[in-house]
Image 1 (tube, rainbow, N blue to C red):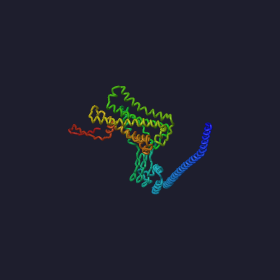
Image 2 (tube, helix red, strand yellow; image 1 turned 180 degrees about the vertical axis):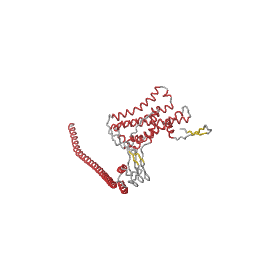
Image 3 (cartoon, rainbow, N blue to C red; image 1 turned 90 degrees about the vertical axis):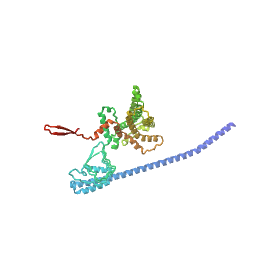
Image 4 (cartoon, one colour; image 1 turned 60 degrees about the vertical axis):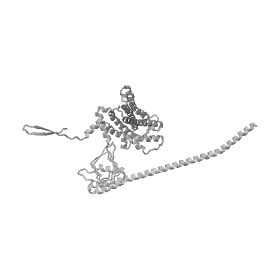
Length: 482
């Protein structure tokens, strides 16, 4: 009986299993068919969207090409008609009105890029110049020169002499880097026009470097920095176009930024030690090594070694550079999350936090001692150092904190937090080398006094000397000291 029950139970189990399999297989086939159809439909829709996108892009390109061809044809017609007109009369003035009409018509049809081509051609052929003794061949008054770009880069020197832009519209025009001599802009509309050719930063940097070269004591304090982003913003692309240059640029830029932060962090700590514990460093030589030389050596060596390994050697990935982007794009270690997080926390957040905390503690302790009227510290001897270092540290915090806080929030909570403003915040870091010479100038009293002495206007003091000559007459001589 027991064997029969077992056999019947096994038979029932196999029957149920066969029934389930018989039901499951069609359901599985139906589910697979539905999923396959949905996948094919989604792929077809995606392909259709991609085809439509490609078609739209081609249509836009065709429109742009058509517009460019029309402008090119207008420019060619203009030069052809102007050449025939001038060739016929050998630049006589009886047809200047026709030349002016054709020029204004062509400028009205062209965009800013080809306006620049046209104006350059007119300048090179001296058709809109007015040298002494010569008459103006083509008058550009009332011409629309909006967006005109005559700027040049640092590799090409350009000069425009005696050109006439009277009564023209020069909105958003650029003459950047061009030497203008005898140019007239009478009654012209100059809105957002760029006439810059140099910056006060370069001038101040040259003054400071010259001071360092001539002064032996200050020469040891020379700080070297290469604001290479200025070249990118000036030219509009990376130059020279080289993988070696991009690797070196990333390495030197990241290293200098981290060195600056670490040095500023340690200077904030050492300033506190020098003010409140001045004998801790000056008494014993080993304390000098521990509290002065070793931290500074670490600040100067850590960042170059670290970034040399992950950027130059790059054992984990291969760097691919984009020469149209600032810094040639990001190095490949940005794809390794652990390295990116360590770099951000240790090389940026850590020193900035130290700078903030050290300055806050210094302010709190100074305030407390003033309130409690403790005069154990000679503040007159430290006031100058505190003020100088406080200015520089506040300068670093003002330019680094916005991007650091934004990146920290993006990495921990909201990935899209202020993503549109992040590029502008990161641009502030590039301004540090530009404003640092001005900050350094404020902390160099000897150089400041020399500059004030050079610039200030001295009044001549005239002294009178009276003496007697042989004939009994007196003469007065005015002496003007140089």
